[in-house]
Image (spheres, one colour):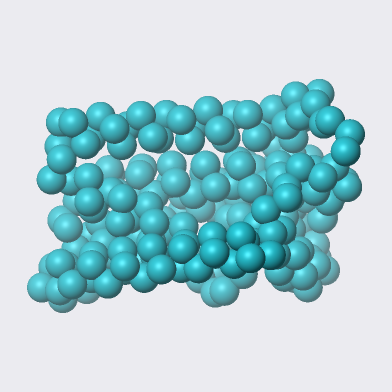
Length: 217
């Protein structure tokens, strides 16, 4: 297989930046584990729940743990930005037939996402960037920032335009969902321990399932 030089592509530079942010994220978790070990479980649960189940699950855990709203918004924005900055360039490079992804579950995710992006792309194209913003804001399956970035690419938008629109929309969506979920804060606090435990266990099970399926295939 031909060796691919990622950094000669602009998408590769985006990927490198995403991986750099991921490294910073892991360092911050390590610092938190050292100085605030009692908060680490909440941060890990928020991270896993956001990745596996979506924004609402991650925010619910943070709010039920009475995390400061500004920290909560920044933390989840950081998570979703890293996801976009890693998965978007991988999708683009894969679309261009540069075989950079050999992990089957991730390839399957790209295929599902591609179908969703192609399905919604004509409607979103009609409204341009505004349509893309509302697509990212929509809290349904196979929408959100990652698939939204794929749609932006299929629409032919420049990389920076796509990323700016998607990340701005993500920021607004996180603020809106935080405000919405905080209306149920009292209920979440009562069931906070159970919520964290259930979502954490479910996230671990889903991740293990993806890993095992990838090994089998």
